Amino acid sequence: MDLIIKNGTIITATDTYKADIGVKDGKIMTIGMDIQDDSAKVVDASDKYVLPGAIDAHTHLEMPFGGTTSADSYESGTRAAACGGVTTVFDFVIQRKGQGLIEAVEGRKELCEPQACVDYAFHTAITDLTPKVLDEFQKSVDYGVPSFKLFMVYKKEGLMVNDGVLLTALKKSKEVGALIAVHAENPDLIDIRIEEYLAVGKTSAWYHYLSREEFIEAEAIKRAIHWAKSVNAPLYIVHLACKEGLDEVTKARDEGYKIYAETCPQYLYFTKEVYKREDGRNWVCSPPIKGKESQEALWSGIKRGDISVVATDHCPFQSYEKDWGKDDFTKIPNGCMGIENLYPYLLSEANKGRISLNKVVEVCSTNVAKIFGCSPQKGAISVGSDADIVVYDPNKEFVITKDNMHSDVDYTIWEGVRLRGYPVMTFLRGNLVYDNGKFVGKPGQGQFIKCYGQK
Ligand code: URP
Ligand code: ZN
Ligand code: ZN
Image (cartoon, rainbow, N blue to C red; front, side, top):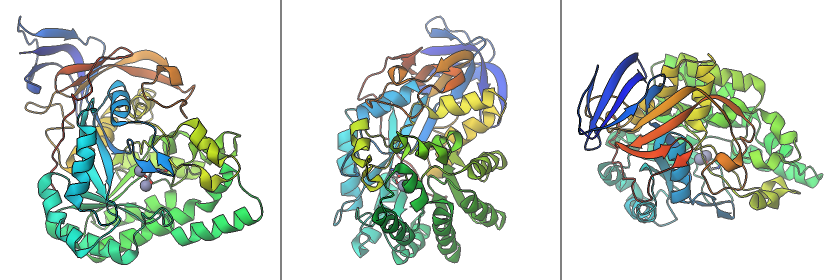
């Protein structure tokens, strides 16, 4: 064996128990009591929890967007991921007009490969659904990218698709075993409000929230679910942030439809009040962070299982870029950071008793692998799975600051947030990549993870 993690308490999505883990050739070889092998490196995890690495289902690394490029490269973003206990990221490939799906994925893969510090998989955001592209759905599933995102917004940015395209994609996805994901907000309502606010000089970040408030997101979620139901296709709603939309998800799931909802840590910790701050633009993302009622509903949705995934939507910009929108909220590049905060924040909330540690593993790791098709290779502490393992100290106190984060961004919205417990080691396929505050991995160490489609 290469590595034995001894005396820890293993936390999976379903179980909590004390055992040792033996690792060979990057895989979990054995789990049991008192594993011995003199040739193996031994890590003592006494008084620590041992968890599967988190899988961030939603990242935008070095993505051209908002008049610039998101500020974390594949290297810095995945470095930060490793330091927050994330061992696989699902990054978004944006299909350019006229571009084929495999061509788009291969372009990003080439960029990512030499830089990736953790494993990576892709979703493709489809912006131009020609008959040729529709025909390529099957190829993309076979290639290992069986999930496609459709933007119901970002009209001016050229990313938006209409309802006809959404329905066509849903139908085809069912045929080939792909999964359609949507960014759900109503673009026409948003545009009308923006015009009204700017006309009377209402330009601060607060009006970003007001132009996209709760029911504007809820309407689009209801519409997307309506279309998915009409063809009985599975649907994944990314970055869901409002109660009314979640209520529709709950209803559809109760009726037996495969509707999955994802929310993000920024929606669980902050409320819309941040947009009243002088630096409120730093929290500008779409959909915007909502009010307390929605936040409480999101936590309840996680507890009852109607929110299947918590992922980051990591899409940071430097503060000078956020400043472009100081006097006009429409010029603020949309997106926030969180890749290094996902597991630590949720585990800290579990440590304080808000949800169980098993639930955190479920929504941040195991469910992601199951929904997007890389289970049981990922998202599990089980024999034969990749040895993607986080050792977590529940007694370590941690205060987030820009300086103890590992990304390339010059601020963090999480500045000053106090956490109870923190990851102390991250192993990627048995290799130590994070050790007590330090990144110890290597760019290029991450591998492409081929996902299978919907079964
Ligand atoms: O504001 C956000 N969420 N930026 C990233 C792109 C997206 O919509 O997911
Ligand atoms: Zn989105
Ligand atoms: Zn996103």
